Image (cartoon, rainbow, N blue to C red):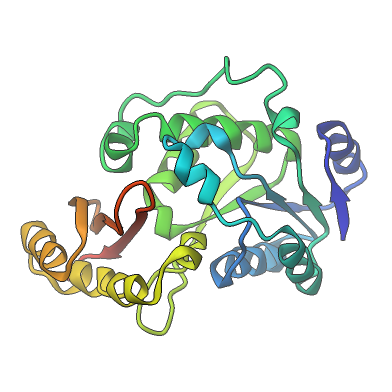
Length: 256
């Protein structure tokens, strides 16, 4: 596996790849959900490029950025075993040489759900993903369905800006008790972890959004939102107390 740390080296490496390229952008602290994205890419492409970059532009709380898990050495070992072609590990100055003066905004879908709860979050996500897609020039990029609003926004951006990279989604990978895999799960205490497992069944089994909201509140979560759209129910909750609270999101297909 080739380790690349500069944009110039990444662009030079990309020119050496004659066959199909799949891309999996991550923020590290890799888990089985990331592995599923990589495996999906491996089945469809001769080369798979993974990036690890904790993007400061998408964090609207300094404490959240500070506490985000970073496990670079462990992640590298895992990616080696998965047979990844290249790992892009840029410093912040590589992707934001001009600072954050230039940004990508979406004016409709990004305004609700996580966009309403985390102002500026999707501006940071779309900006860094556009930079990465332009650098890697992959045939397809892979994103998990846990962050479904993010997937929709990135797919919409790629279409609106005529990017050549196809945006693909991969089904959410869950723990045995149903909790969606997330790098932030590493921060949960044992008590918080037991509570977190209740998010999925509350969303899945409730008869309405209001019922799900009430069930989550009774379980002990601080609820950001529960809402349904396009055949899915979306929910975001918080556990713990500020400034150390941990935010969890999930979505489920609504039973017909």
